[in-house]
Amino acid sequence: MMLYEFMPNGSLWEALHGGTPETRTMLVDWVSRYNVAAGVAQGLAYLHHDCHPAILHRDIKSNNILLDTDMQARVADFGLARALARSGESVSVVVGSYGYIAPEYGYTLKVDHKSDIYSYGVVLMELITGRRAVEAAFGEGQDIVGWVRDKIRSNTVEEHLDPLVDGGCVHVREEMLLVLHIAVLCTAKLPRDRPSMRDVLTMLGEAKPRRKSGSSATASNAVVVAVPATVVDKDKPVFSTTLAPSD
Image 1 (cartoon, rainbow, N blue to C red):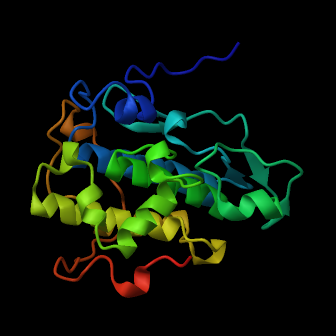
Image 2 (cartoon, helix red, strand yellow; image 1 turned 90 degrees about the vertical axis):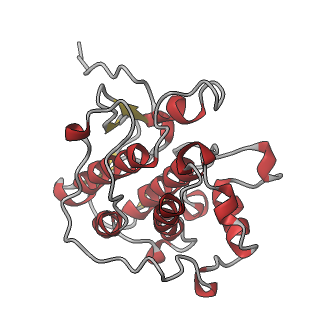
């Protein structure tokens, strides 16, 4: 018999996409969503860098991220996880969930920690836009990664930040765009262009909101990312033409 800690607030997917925007009561402010992003990043960094051998989750998605009483994120469902004996280890089958699988995984069958990082980037996009990983509105054969890249190319991405959390506040939108920048890096087409989870933690530290959560979660229990403090130039554009994703 296995015992698991009860997660009263369900999954991240339910918090973001369950019901209608008018009936959602969880994760309705940016600080709470940032804390979830940081908590998942801490969990993945532990699996990738502090476990020996490193552990690949292989099915990171919003359904597999649970929220405890204090709305802290817990990475769950390790049914597809495996220890990584060496970099670029081959597997015989494709695993994961549609919309979250890194593009190289489907045709090379290579297991690498960068595949988890791609999936994490998709979750970040869900947190920032409030959209699902796959929606019919994105267009045939399109997922949230391609949709976000299209909005960046057309310079309209700011219009698609989740209005439930930005509240029309300029500073909140700037912080959301900083984290969206991280999401774009995590979902780079080529694995070598994606950051490590340690790098992601550092970047999240630079994008950390300067306010406490306005949600019902206890502020003292918010996730804290232990990374060096870095001054962020808020006047520098988050997205430039050099960051436009390639076709």
